[in-house]
Image 1 (cartoon, one colour):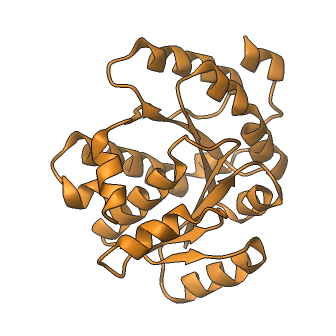
Image 2 (spheres, one colour):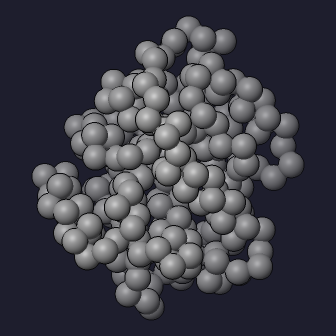
Length: 223
């Protein structure tokens, strides 16, 4: 079983949207998935409660139950476990980082969000877990996206070459307990999720994700 942790310092970056959509996309590809909802707001659990299907299962648990839940998921044949974190970098996020094969760090394309990414990068490096930066909730056809991508290179981590845009389709599907691959399977939002999943699968299975990471240079990240 592969474990993908999603960590962030602040809310509003679309982390739960990514978690539920990636889990559904994994199921769509024939790989059983689950979501471990460690966010006290339990947004992924609320989504699951509104859902008409039993998969992917969502377990809303406290951090002390994380190891037990992951062991049970592996025993049940789950191929991908996605860990959704609270909007803070605390002991919960640290536990997620230690349990993950790969950390996904979502970033909105704004100066404040880019600056707030530094602690998440430091967490990944402190634990020694591979991480990738993903531009999320991006405005469509905005120069801000490429400027943000250039600024993120200061962190010296892989940056997903695509984006996940701020589309109405995501909000509508979440409210209905669905994913965009179900509500609008031929839409642009579904294509963005499919492309991101393909990229993450490569990282999760690549030996490149096992290379050590270096301490973050905060001064470079602020430039």
